[in-house]
Length: 294
Length: 294
Image 1: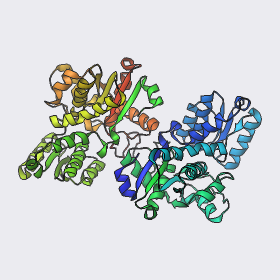
Image 2: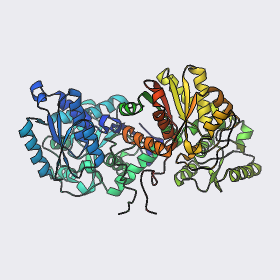
Image 3: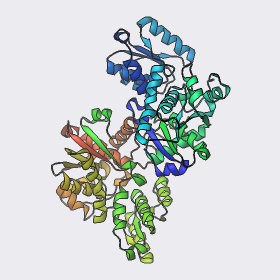
Image 4: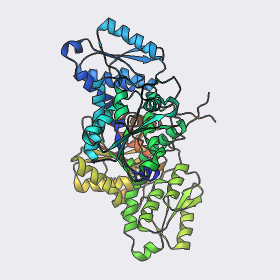
């Protein structure tokens, strides 16, 4: 999709790849399907398990449902209710845990021990990365050569997949990542040349709070041009701009990519830019531009 | 656009014609363009004028801008700020008036006297009706035969255009209209066989508060199958459902058509149903499911 008004605001010709319109409301369905389909029958019989703040959990639940196998999804008890409802709606077995990485991993390990389920990591898994790569693959096949592709980065599954697909299909296209300033671990890792883990700083783009992994980091390090960090206000502003002008519901993580293009507009001026809208799962009762009574 | 989850909820196979993605955010751009393009050069030189609660005003402003002529838009002072800003953004001359039909018409008459501008009525004008007819024309051309087409009815420009296009292109397709229960003047007119004007009852679907006109009424009377009225809660529920499941921002008037399909689901069961999403201009600061502090 594209919009004259958005182009005028961004100063480039932008084409949006709308994974908010993907099944389960996010690109995560691609990696989850690829991972679930790659299991042999014996593995599949024991089901799959993951820990996820939401979109990957829903995607794995849906993908497992299509193959007729069980998905166990470990979710922090603080996950937005709309995301938990989505995961349960796809038929998954949801297991709550404390909202820390340690608690998620411990709970996931227990489920694996008890059920024999295969762990499908949300991003640091080559089956997931290659699944997510189909987003950029389709975008490049649909619109032809782009000067730059921009996507958000959290754990790096989408970012690494985008970098790989672009490298294979259109090596002259640059890949730029957007990241929230408050959790700029990918930016700092990219500058340092080694993984620096995220602290637990808050961001409205809650899907991007994770650190890069051992599979995603080297792909990003070697094949991404730059990482642009954006403030919370810039994320909210970009989100609202797209809602208002394109009539598309995009989640804050998606708005990070749009805000990054706006922030980087001097370098992207006049270019043909592909922007990956990663998802559209938003809690409509809690929108960031509306103050709620306490 | 279509959605498995929406089909499951509605009990039919629904295809959405998304005029929320139209320029100016609503179908009104079609009628306005047709009207502005039909002026001769002498008429065009004096500009155009209309009174509109918003979407037609923005559409006429944009259409006039494309032809390089002036649009004068009379708007009630109570119009949502987002709609006024849109009209001004398209370069129109906005003139405020009191929020009554009498005040709108008096102010419009004064502008006509002073400027010689041609009045482009929001709906009761054959150029407008035939312009709006292109919505259903495109829908039928794109998706082939439909059992039923559903659209909202206010003044009846879209409804009459939809009925005419369907009559010419696919006469076996039924046309059903959705209308808010609180302003059910079209329903009552349809039952009575003559125009019954709307009182000033409130509805969230503020674009549908107008009464039918002398051009729109007979077309609707003769070529529409039935009018389904829906409550405010049904409108809000349908709006939120589409936002959540389709990630599309639709305005309350559009949700009236969706709610009407849901309410009429026993009769539409299993059918291929075209739903016209009339627009997506929503004040994001005031969403109907969020209670604001007073």
